[in-house]
Length: 268
Length: 221
Image 1 (tube, helix red, strand yellow):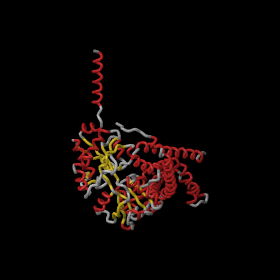
Image 2 (cartoon, one colour):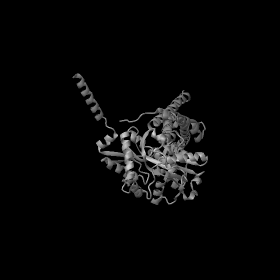
Image 3 (cartoon, chains in turn yellow, cyan):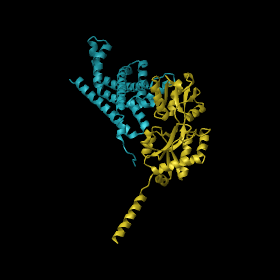
Image 4 (spheres, chains in turn purple, green):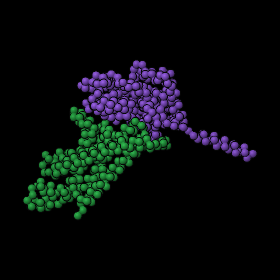
């Protein structure tokens, strides 16, 4: 008799215990809002239209995700260096912010499978007479500090032993510095470069061929220990590709064939 | 809640680089103070001038330097001048911005100090046969520096902290620049920033203590 009461009590305790534990995925569904960190000076992934609304590939991606979860999306603008603090301090649930999936960063943040891949191009001032990537040697160049291409370019400049590298805090400052002639060229993701040239605001900038870097795979980010959420995000990315929505969004914001998100000879 | 495990090892690994950056920070702060003091003396004297032609530009400098954010001043030195084809490197732009700011604040400090020195002191010097410049240099200026010394060290601390604004113009060799670089590379924001804050605190404290010791040696009667 006492034993059965004890067992019943233990069972009740375990059920209550597990019911009381809600992970991030539960929290999002319960709150009815999905808060996404999106970088809005990084067209066409994220920018503002003339009415100051957030638009772009990442914005649409966040809206799709919210729809799949059955909640409303809230876009929280962050800068590139601000993404992790926003995540860790609980201001956002997910980073839909073109985050390159480096091993160094994965020690801190949880990455999904790639949801997008960038190639990098050289964007230079016409007057600088830079024909291609090798022509950057000896010039003052710059990028957004700490980004995939920024880290790679800084390493190149160090190896060349001539010229200078300047890291800026955001993409807008890089283009400002470039158009003024503070720097002669930048290495930037092809999508951003074409978007910037297409605006016509910078008539003296030209794309000068590809940078010889590996494709820059970017993932969504969430807290490292939120496996329920990360699993959901992985499946969501898979479904976006499967359903053709990935290609549709790519055509809408970039145009052409969407980049392959798989890496040959290995699983992820 | 705070969903994060601190990994101090990751931050401490970068300590040598941060200390290298501290030297650059200190260097910029010292240079900006030396030049700032020189400009400030000129500005303080110019503001007291009877001629509007001399006092107006000095007043304008002081007004802008004191009433706009230092961030704006540094940003203007880099991107503002860049618009006119004058290219200052991040280092020079940062140095110029802080010097401009220092000069503005110190000019007011010095002007206050000058006011505190009785006019009879100048007259006494002149009556000994000194010219106006010599009287200023030998009698007024030493007293002015004595009165303004502690407020000046205050500005020195402020100059050290202002160097952290250099990251906005692409500065990557000072303490803040290196901190930011390690941060975006590793995403260990809290540890790296905390470490940098401690270093800033220690530098500022070191400077304050040195200044106190110096004042004690120089100004005792």
